[in-house]
Amino acid sequence: MRIRLTDDGRMLQGTQTQIVQTMQSLAFGRQDMPLGDYVDWVAGEVSRLMGVTLEVPGETGELKAEALVSELLRTGFAEKL
Image 1 (tube, one colour):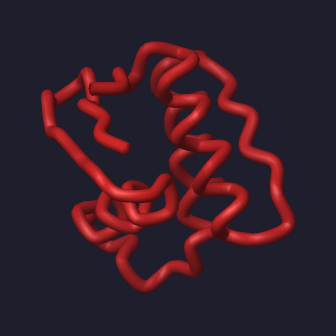
Image 2 (cartoon, helix red, strand yellow):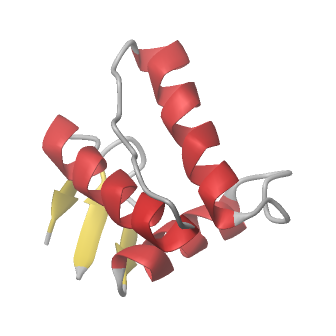
């Protein structure tokens, strides 16, 4: 899968988990968080800053990562290439 983040035009590719792991590696001070916690942090920041609720359910970091990518696409914060 390839997506483009609409806020900065950055293109990311891989599985949904790999895409979120790449996003996390670029997030200052968030690299050492467990993946699921990072996803929850992103969803919270989007809600706080943009007023949009992202639904990111899942019991594992991988499931939450899949949900995050789907929600970014659904809300227009990312587009599939």
